[in-house]
Every structure is written in C-alpha cells, then in structure tokens.
Image (cartoon, rainbow, N blue to C red; front, side, top):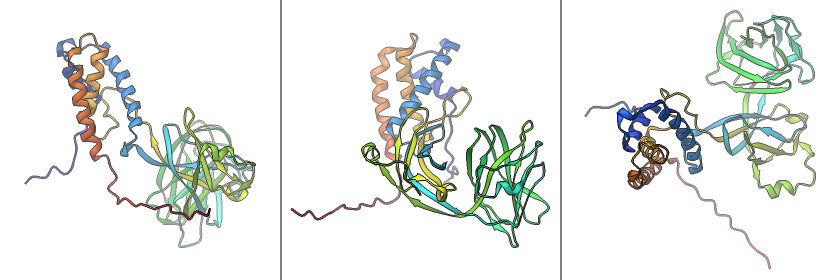
Length: 353
C-alpha cells in the first residue's frame, strides 16, 4: 500500500471560492471581479464566526505577556480572542562577567535592574553584549525593555568562542517608551556570550533593561470572575500576582492581576494559553488559516452564504446547502478534539448544619 506521507492538501481562497460559486449555481462564465470583492467580506465574516464554535485547536497558541511595576493591567497581544489559562513565570538571571555596547552608551545600565536607567546608543546597527564565565550559560528567555519609542528590528545572537556570533532569533516590533518585549528561545546552546543586535537602519537602540534569563519556573495562577475582582477591597496591594481576571474588551483582552506587581515581580511574565483570531483573507492566492479537515465545511458554508449575496446564484439551492453544511460541520467537529485522557476531579465537601 502506498503512503501519502500524511500530507493534507491546502486549498487557496480562490479554489474554495470557485467551488463554492459552482455549488451556489453560478456558472464559470459569470465570475466577475465584483464577486471576488464580495467573497472577501463573506470569507472574513465567516472566519470570525468560526471562533464562536470555540473548537479550533490549530488557532490556540502560547504568548508571553509582561508584567509592569505598580500596574494591575496586562494587555494581551492583538489577535487574541480569549485567554484560557495563565501561568506565572519566574526565570533565573545569570550574572555576566562583562557587558559591552559597541555603538555608544553604558552597557552596564541595561543589566542593573533599574528600569529608570538606560543604555542609550548613538548609532545604528549597534549591539549590547553580555559575556559569562566558562563553560557559559544557556539562555531561553530574553526580555527587552525599550526606553524609546519606534519600530525596531533586532537579532538575538550567541557566541561559543567569544568571537563568532550566530543568530538564534529575530524580531521586528513597534513599541512605546517603557514597553517590554519578551521572546522565548528554542534550542539555545550553552554559550559564552549573548547579545541583541539592532538591524534597524534609521534609529539607534535605547534599552532600559536587557534580561537574559534561564531555568524558567511556571506556576499556574487562579482565575477570577468579574464579581471576585470587584470584591477585592484594595486592588493596589503590592506583591507577586497569583490571580487574574480577564476583561474581554477591544481590540484585545486585558488581564487584571492581583496583587499589583511590586519590585519582586517586575521581571516576571505571564505565560498565557490563548485562542487567537483566524487570519483574514486579503489575497485570493493565500491558503486559508484553517485545518484541511474543514475544507468541505468551509466550501458549503461559503456557497450557502453566496446564495444570499449574489443575484447570479440559485437561491433554490439554499436549503440543500444548509443541510450539507450541517453534515460537514458534524464530521469536522468530531475530529476537532484533544486526544489526551480526560480527568475528573470531584469537588466533594462536608457541610455542617
């Protein structure tokens, strides 16, 4: 028996649209550019509605949300629909033996633990370097506290011999002054030196704190309801956050943590498991942000919606497409599951009368 290699075919938006138009009764000769514009709206409305089903396993990922000193609010990244659970992360911070900045500024100010001081470089393409005793250290969490606003591209690099540098991560971010950006590294080696290098061509870096961390410890913290949050008498109590409330506002949810982060928590982060929005369709040549398991459902759902949108479509097919869409949804959702074993924890208590 031949083996396909487990590869599922990824359809483009145009292929889905052409199938949907045919199912809606629109003949190939009737396809117009206006239909394509309508299809963009229908596609994106449909993808947004899919989140209401709440079962898109491929649209779940993990993001790192920074904590800010003396602030209860933590803003989740754009594209977040809902945060499902949160862990508090604490890292160890190895002490470098030497720090350098090759385009001006005092590198030591990026490692002094003081967010009010900064290594202000005076030229572009600069790097801030930290060197460690042999045999070196493994770094797997990198936090950059930007002291100036702008759009920056930077590389995280390591050196095994103190001479040649190898890139392990790249980021392009738009930040405000006083904003953290945290990155998690995968496959990091034990290295003598670590650095970030500015690849922005028109703006030097100004870094308030550069945090090279390792040995992360993640501790689940409890979630509160709106009533629980409102019932806290003093929301300004300082400490290390151990509970959170999610306010689902636009454009992205806000996590309200308690106690309010103090000095001991200023380098902590929140590791959030979230469900994100599906990528919007902006080009008919792009593949949809969907598992191929959902191709038939997406096609029939698109066809049913086009029956209402396009005068060229055959509205008499609407009921037939609705039935096919329902059957395709059942088939797709039956496999949209987590194969991990289910565990029940009974909450039994003794009541005294």
